[in-house]
Length: 352
Ligand code: ATP
Image 1 (cartoon, rainbow, N blue to C red):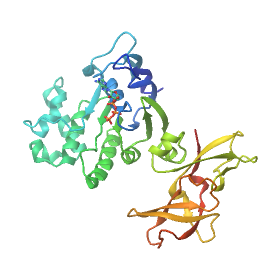
Image 2: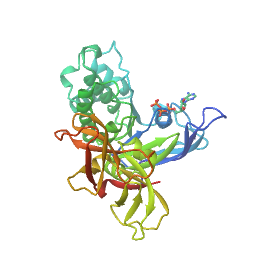
Image 3: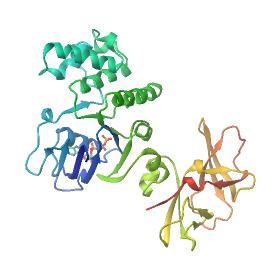
């Protein structure tokens, strides 16, 4: 049975226009870390706020740990939902010590238990020595761990985190992705994280929910999402890709496109007429005698790789987009050079 269950949730802020969240259904298992990922305005924060109880759905139901949180006729207030919230700006009380901040949600606990619990969660987030400091005396990453400790202190059913990494610089962000996941795993907590950053979502989640215009596009584990994006939106939002249209071969194993025949990772279950392929740029490998060849149109240095745009020779359609290919940085490639490459079928997917 799922631990958190959202059924057909819709939220309309006005009668005109499309709903902010439209018929969203989602099941989450106990202990799972799930990210809601999507572009600005896709409805992820609204979804999180409806789970937290800061916003009521226009229709639909929410259950947590077997209990009805939102039914068609009733909605529990936020404080009765057993939810811990970590806000984007951490929302720590500046005049309170770290220990007092963490204690804040424990007002119903007995004094001795409170102190014990504060000690426990500060240990969990690795800040036991900072109990008597004030938030302004901590770094951004430490403040975030305090916010997480405060959310975890009352032993909530679920922790909700809104853009937890967006206030951190690149280096710290990477460390905090690791720390936050570690802490959530050790606390054995179910968590839902809102982010617009694919790297955040992939690094911290068991499963990712990609949303667009209030509608779920795909729910999958990060690797599956990247390898087998369901549609063009997911393929383009999650990483970079080449989208090509084509016709399926009779053998159901390859697609005829404007760059030539492209093999599928596995035989298609059905014969489809017109199809769209997603080919990841790192799935195109420069090779001396590759099956595809063309002229380099553009080279962009990307640090770990260089991004090439290659116009294929056999391209009949001159308006077709060039192929985006990642090449090793040590390889000398210049605009105008002829290159040939192969395509790894594992990084090819049929998309809707
Ligand atoms: P972001 O990453 O920019 O925060 P988001 O995916 O979290 O975006 P939401 O904040 O959930 O998106 O907003 C979804 C849609 O609902 C947007 O079109 C937004 O303008 C609208 N919306 C959100 N809150 C309200 C509100 N209180 N009143 C009216 N419209 C709202």
